[in-house]
Image (cartoon, rainbow, N blue to C red):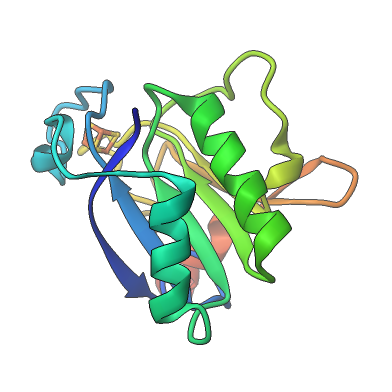
Length: 157
Ligand code: SF4
């Protein structure tokens, strides 16, 4: 079962959106130099439709996007929850995966945004010009438009 260790309302993880970011635990990726080592443990509350309803009750009027941060152990559960968000709210959906590739038999249509790639300390995060990670806007036809540059604008000026 997916669990989330904590959450926050953030402005930088998804460009142009006020995002409820859910930090999902039990991460299988073991990135050397992990920036959030506590997320490698099986900790937190079950991430269920009821938990999402509870969060929407508290923050639904303030947010424009829900971002699932992690969940690579159960990507199809992430897909189901993203679909639930789409069907029950007007929020956009995003997924931050630590994998380079999308899982097999995975539909991107439940998402508006995707981040792919493990964290590699030597290359930095999305705001680093040398990052190995990519942030994508999912187009209506399911194609992926690379928006990584939006995180790097400050460095390019
Ligand atoms: S994907 Fe994120 S939480 Fe998981 S090991 Fe890598 S940096 Fe840490």
